[in-house]
Image (cartoon, rainbow, N blue to C red; front, top):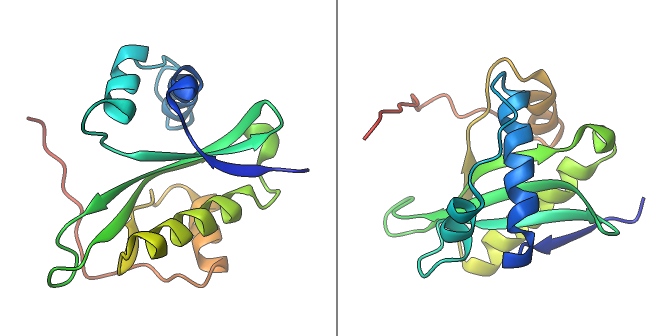
Length: 149
């Protein structure tokens, strides 16, 4: 398997939308991709909300990682927040998530970030096993909140 990890471009917006539909289905929702215009505006508009790494197997996209910068992290430091790490079913258990995590951490170092942060669902044992295998312990000091606007 010869995989390349690359930054997504506007030409990848439709594929990203399709994968986001797959992510929704993975978590029990409907496999409905978000509107292409929404994905394009969020990632490639004048104020991009995130950067997306794509894992490519030739012309096929095998997975993605979406990250955003956060400030402040500690003091005036900047951190990189991993919002989504997803590997398509045929590519799971082949080391692809590790490759994407390595790309995310390298990007954080290049940006001068002090750390990478993310959350994981407690009922996603594959993700939890990956992070444990990477030697990353859960941070017990935070409680996650979410509200609508």
